Image (tube, rainbow, N blue to C red; front, side, top):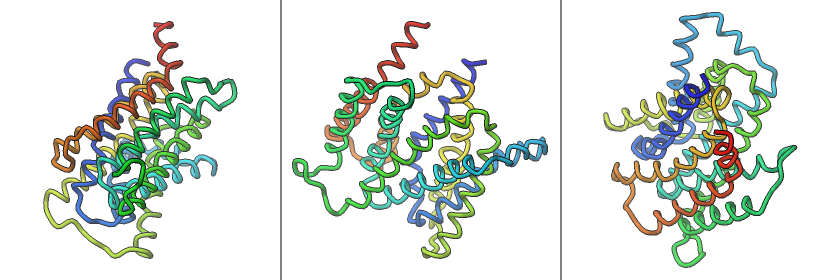
Length: 291
């Protein structure tokens, strides 16, 4: 049962590695509109399960801290992520946003019963060094044209890390509640879009396919499988495996023609991944000794 749940959780990592590619391929739909459409699509798997078993609606009845955590995490993260990819090169914005596994490790070390050790600090320094490498154009100076995108990507990483850490307190909340979070996020995104943005629809079939793909996979099924995996599977193994997402994401962008291979991007990916693995040394060591 635990191994099966862990494998299900792995599928979320694979789907999230396509988030940057599909967002880049989705055209010029503004962030709130894109979030509204994709989260509505993302709620469909849960609605299908609800139609098959109406008693699942009981999962929607949760205390307000659960709702606040779920909506703030999903709505906040994706608005920041979509904004980052609209205002910076997708490969670079995606790599910065994928600092969230490192932030989760560092944040977990500060929780009761945990200690911040030297290898946590070394891992953080390596991860931040990778970030400076991909956002710098001349030494350590930022390219002002992409500042907004870089800032949004950093905030995106912090938001998802905070959401994930807070979610640990609500381990008894059933995965069906994710459907409610998706619907609420879609509604809030649409309200924000109507108030703040001009509507822009995809212009080509391929852009529509990218939007639908976003909703079904990285912004849909991935949340259900991740939620199930971290609650029922090996959360230490899933946490360590999530550090592969930056490299998978960049590889997908290169294969899709939205990024060019370069030593700068490759080096940044290696630094971020190495830093995260070093910071997660305790989790990996514990798994080996208990295997």
